[in-house]
Length: 484
Image (cartoon, rainbow, N blue to C red; front, top):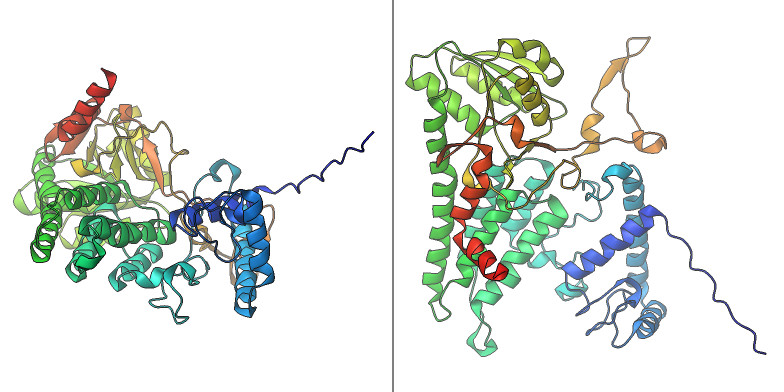
C-alpha cells in the first residue's frame, strides 16, 4: 500500500493581500505586460516573456513558476532593489487599504500623487535606456508631456468639476493630435489603430488608473473621440486628419458644453420670479451662470442661500462671485438646511451625471437637500447638459462611487486645556480602531426631482430614457435587432 502524500495547505491571504494581488493583476493586464494573459507568479499561460519575476512563460502554470524562479535567481542587483521597492510599496498600499471601510472596499483607494509610490507620472523620461515595457515607471515616459501635466492637475484637485475636467481632457487631446506623426509606410500600420491604441488609450488609461477615476462626461467625450477616429478614411492625408479631429473636439466643447449651458440658462431663468428665495448647493458653474444672468438681465429681486459642506467648502468661491455681482446671499453648512428650508421657494442643483432612470449623481449631500425639499413641497430643478447622460442604472451610492482624500477630513483642530491648537485626528493611520471615509458623490432618486433643465428644454426625470434613445438611435436599433 502506497502512502498518500497530502500537499501542504497554501497560506491564507488576508483581505489586504488579496486586494494587492488583484490590483497587480489588473495593472499587468492593463499595461499588456509580458504578452497575452500574464498573471502574477506566472499562474496563467502567456505568449511572451515575463517581466520582473511575474512569470508569463509559454505553456502552463508550472512553466511560469519555473520562469519566475529562474528570473529571481538570475536577477542582478538592480532587480533585487526594485523588488524590495515593490514589496515596500505593496506594504504601504496594504496599510492604506486596511483603513478603508469593508463596506466600500470594492472601490479603488484614493491615490495621493505626493506620497503614493504608484503615481509615477512625474517621470517624463527613462534614464535606464530600457524599452517602455521593462522600465520602472511602466512606460509613462512615452506619454505626451501635456498628458502628464494634466494628470497631476487631476490628482491634486487643481481641476475639479465635470465640465472643467472634460474640457481640459479634450484640449489636451488637441495638443496631442497636433504633435502626432503618422507611422511610416514601411510598417503598414493603419494610422487609426496606431492613434487610438498608442496615443489616445494610454493617455486615458493613465489618467484613470494613476491620477483619478474618470467622470461620466470624460467617458462620453472619449467615446466620441474614438468614434471620430474610426470614421476617418484610411487613405486621408495627415494634415486633413488633424484638422478634422481638432475641429471636431472644438465643436464638441462649443456645442455640447458651452452652447448647452447658454440654452439651459435661458430655460431655467424663466422659473425665477421676483421675490424668490433660491437654495443652491456646493459649487456649480452652470448655476452660478444662471443666477448672474438673471441678475444682470432683469429687474427681478431674489435671494440666494448657498449650502456648503466639508471638507471641500466649494461654495465659498461661488459666494464671493455672487456677492460681487450684487446678489443678496446667505451662507450656511449642510447641517442647517432643515432650519432654513421653510424660507426657500425653489431649489436649483447641478449634476455630475444623469443616469438612465432619471437619478442624479452629484456631490455628496445633494440627496439630503432634495429629500428635505420634497418633504417641504419645494420644487427641485436640476440643471444638466445632455452629454452628461449615462446609459447605466444605479440604485444606490455604494456600488459606484469615488473615494476622496481621507486626509482632507483631518484638518479639524480644537483647543486643549492650555489653549494650544491640536488636531483631533492626528496620526489617525496609526490607530487601529479608527477609519476615515470621504465619499465624493451620492445618488438622488428621480422621485426627489421635479424637473431636469437641459438644452432640449425642461423635462421630467421619466423622459431621460427617451432622450437617451433619441440621442443614440444606433443603440436602440441594435437592441431591436438583437431581440428579434
